[in-house]
Image (cartoon, rainbow, N blue to C red; front, side, top):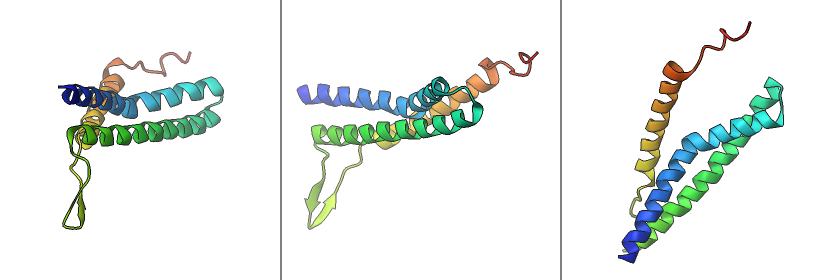
Amino acid sequence: MKRRLAAGFVLASMVAGSIALWIGAPVLGLWLGSKMTSSFGPHLVIALMLSVTGMLVVALGLAWANDLYLRITGGAAREVGGITLRRQGPLEPLLLACLACAIVAFLLWFFVLAENPTVNIY
């Protein structure tokens, strides 16, 4: 019972981390970049570096959580006949599902919720 509860908690953490990878880290990088400079050119470079760095940090955390999930559920690496076999964890399907959700959310925002910036220029 404790192992299933722990596995469920790690799985929920991986869902949140996958969403943070595709949405949270880029948005946070853009926001932090806007606080560091007001000029467009440096803002773009700083935001890109911060976004990529944030995504790498989240990806490393997700890889660790996937390995933890496999250890909890008994899916860690095993050696059979001198060959190391590893069961695939839930991380890969989670990343693809959260990427699809992020793309849908972006398209919804872009085509439905975003305002036309040219209207507010004058």
